[in-house]
Amino acid sequence: MAKNLQASILLDFYGEMLTQKQRDFFEYYYNEDLSLSEIAENEGITRQGVRDSIKRAEAQLQEMENRLGLYARFQEMKAGLNEILECADKINEYNLTHSLSREINDNVTRIKSIAEFLGE
Image (cartoon, rainbow, N blue to C red; front, side):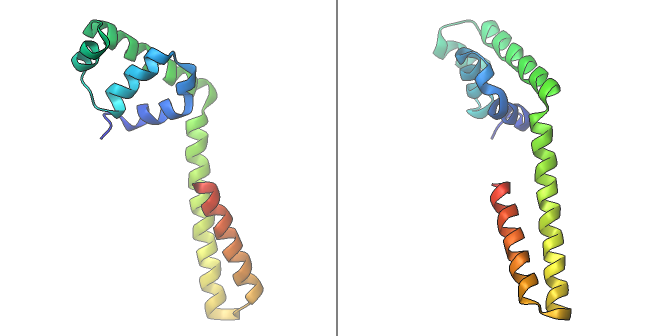
C-alpha cells in the first residue's frame, strides 16, 4: 500500500517531468514501500541522498500541480461524471414509473455509457 496516495497520483500526472533517478526513488519509496535505507543500499548512495532526491521530487510535483492543476481538474471531472450518472439514473427511474418512453431509455443508456467510458 502506498505511503501517500496523493504523492503517487501526482507522480502519475507529472512523473515524466522528473529525472529518471527521482522517478525511480519516488516509485521505490511510495509505490513499492521500500525504506530510504533499502533504496540507498540498492542504489549505492547515502540514505540522505535518497531522502534529498525524494524531497526535491515531492516539491517539484507539488509545484507542477499548483501551477497546472491537472489532478484537481481530473477530480472535478470525475465528480461531474458521477453527478451525470446519478442524474441519468433519476431520469431512468422517472421514465420507468411515469412515461415508459423508449427514446428516453435509449438516451439514458447512451449517456451512462459515455460517462462510464470517460470515467475510466
